[in-house]
Length: 147
Image (cartoon, rainbow, N blue to C red; front, side):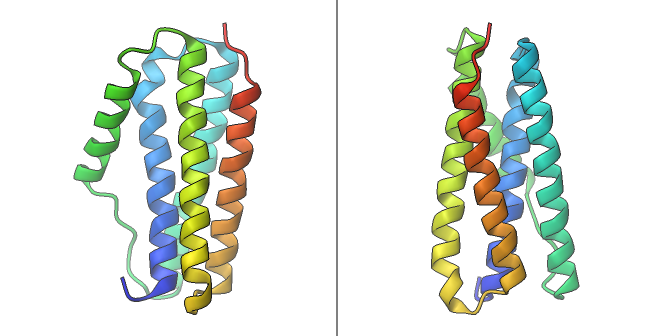
């Protein structure tokens, strides 16, 4: 993409949708009440970021965000493979923690790459908020002890 604002907003949208797909991919395995509550909060966060990124793209006349069926299948397939051998609720929490940590790191790299290329300050701020939220979520999941 040549427009750094569009690239960042699309990245935010993709990270949030990927997070949703990850949770949906293992939701049927989650039984721990604390992990259920935490994943519900994560889903709300991801919904907020997908909505806001899409809204900003439209407000700035940059088109629509996309997350294709191929993207969805790729994420769900990866989660299925990663979670097949997991047998405890703590292992599921650890998988989600790793996903949040990796998402925060990807967002950090994207922001660093696009910040000096004329990216819209509001888009940068949204990316920074998402990066911080993902890092905080990773910390929370790291402290969670599941039964």
